[in-house]
Amino acid sequence: MMRAVSWIMALIFVAGGGALRGDLIPVTDRNVMHGLSPFNWVCTDDYISSTVCGASMTVRCNGTRQVALRVDLGHIQKATTVATRYPIIAWSVNGGPIQTHQLAAGETTVVLAADTAQPLIDLYIKGMSPFEDRYQGDVPGTAVKITGLIVDKGGTAAAVELPDKVWLNIGDSIMSGDGAAGAPNSGRPKNDLWAQAGDGRASYGYLLARHNGYREARLAYGGYDWAGGMAGLPRLATLIDQQTLTVQRIAGDLLRPLPDIVLINLGENGVPADKDVVAALGKIRSRINAVAKMIVMIPVSGKGRTEITRAFHAYQSAAKDGRAYLIDLGRITFTTCDGQHPTAAGHQAIYAVALPAFDRIIRRAEGEN
Image (cartoon, rainbow, N blue to C red):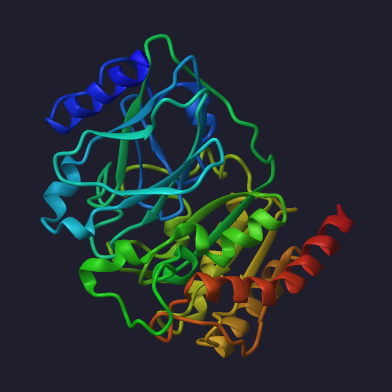
């Protein structure tokens, strides 16, 4: 009872603008680092940060009944004064119900678990504004920046067992899950409400990775395309190497860990030039290994079908890449919030139609190993 009262007093102290008391698990803790989704996080000695909807952190905390996330939002306060454009995080504790919280100006601490034995935290970025910068500098304007975990005195982090195989999803607002939290036919979200309309884990790409037993990583952003897009993001042939303008994504000449599958679904935001598709596929192949499966998927709307198909075959012919695949689901029906962005149920529908095509490729490719 005294522990619960102590923690409640700490929460009151936070609400009053102070800081929680306890020990700080730094972001450099190897067990915290182990639980970060690959390719999504800028990692330094002082913080981790991400601009990717769906980026995740999974960690168990031992010797504590409380866990709070310590955040730094100064860069967002410089980027926007609109409270509803701040990122929304979501998490579960010990596999329980999903909780959500929209970050707010001046906030330094978010309580994730209170009076829970050995809390296992599974946290992800649920929704983000697509308009603020996602690329310039070390910490772009819309990034979620985490500086540590506050736990009871003596509390420690422990690694959680995660899948060894990595599935990298690359795409636009649809892959990102933007609009997935919207109701059917509710209309395009207002510019200031995109964060609230998103759900990164509703994405059909996340569902495909999870179904196949892979650990998902993601490079998906609203307004993105093969040649670049909104929020300062460069063309894909550059983005695969760079997390931000100043921070590289690759180690040496390769992505680490090496992904086993890379799924690319782009073209919804404009018909790409052949050269942009060919350059991106060539660069991605050079950053993974020769046996990884690289799958290009035609947008579910059918946009750019002719051009993407032509460019894919041009790449495949020139590169002699037998582990590159093209998937075209044809015309399918799914619910949207606005005629374009799938709802959560819409993503489930896309996933169900896509599953047999992906299973055939994965089984065939694995049989060749």
